[in-house]
Amino acid sequence: MATYLVTGGAGFIGSHLCDRLLAEGKRVVAVDDLSSGRIANLAEARSYGQQLTFHTIDIRHPEIRALFERYRPEVVLHTAAQPSVAVSIKDPALDASINLIGLLNVLECAAGTGVRKVVFAASGGTLYGEPKALPVKENARNRAKPVSPYGISKAVGIQYLEFYRRTRGLDFTALALGNIYGPRQDPYGEAGVIAIFTAGMLSGETPTIFGDGEQTRDYTFVDDAVHAFALAAERGSGEVVNVGTGVETSVNRLFNLMCTLTGFRGQPQYGPRREGDLRRSALDVELAAKELGWQPWTSLKDGLRMTVDSFRQG
Ligand SMILES: NC(=O)c1ccc[n+]([C@@H]2O[C@H](COP(=O)([O-])OP(=O)(O)OC[C@H]3O[C@@H](n4cnc5c(N)ncnc54)[C@H](O)[C@@H]3O)[C@@H](O)[C@H]2O)c1
Image (cartoon, rainbow, N blue to C red; front, side, top):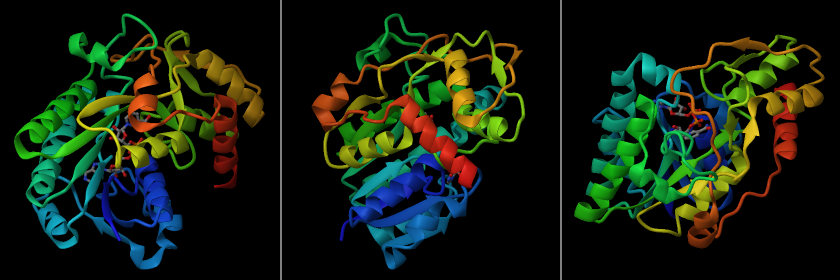
């Protein structure tokens, strides 16, 4: 049975990924320091018994090496990160410590223990800076400037992946993810507008829209994103690949859709625009179709409905 190591395995995307890999019959080693992830996210994964092992450990810690030596994973799916633009602006050193030093620790261990491939959770919403044309293609990153420390660390992370591929033969695919949403996303963090809106609206609290609400994002359902990770473990090589829908949705439109789904009747409250936030974002996903055989198949309405239902139940 092939062993796959998932960093950030108790997080939002990481835990869904563990479920998917276990369902495919893989042995999964999930690693997380539980700084924002929750062990409860692995409830479904735990039902696979010994096919899953979980380790509470910081990816920056030297002990990670012992895990790689013990399990000898074939593939590493690297989702552990400091995932918030706002936090990265407040504390760029913390962001770099987790998103770069942590990544380097993982890459050193992977290169030193015969890992075949790393699939990296990059960020399509920040990698390209303010895009000149939409939907944005992967080659736009050659002349792009990320506008936040989070975007910078994710962009530099890709350069490290390229370095390890060139010098150590460690293959990678970097998935430039749109705004991923769905069940289990943390509604109390500083990222994840859909989770924040859902939790707020269901408890009758008025959500805050930062800026005028006409900023757009490429909202992508978590199940579609996880499918891209699973495909990228087997296909593609040494590339950045967008994972989104190609569709721009404004925060104001999102708010209206969510009012209908949650039954919220209030008006939004508007706050100041947040530093580091882009005006527009949507990802071109032709390369993902070509390289990974991937395409999104969940409409925003369906994805939002599943998200709201899961928050209602949970
Ligand atoms: N959700 C999105 O819209 C989105 C978009 C683009 C990229 N990403 C990237 O996808 C990945 C997963 O994001 P998510 O939304 O699931 O966030 P998340 O916060 O739910 O998951 C990150 C996980 O990493 C863990 N973690 C953080 N620091 C760690 C450390 N030092 N050692 C071990 N574990 C650590 C956290 O506890 C958490 O479980 C991140 O790399 C993020 O940057 C997410």
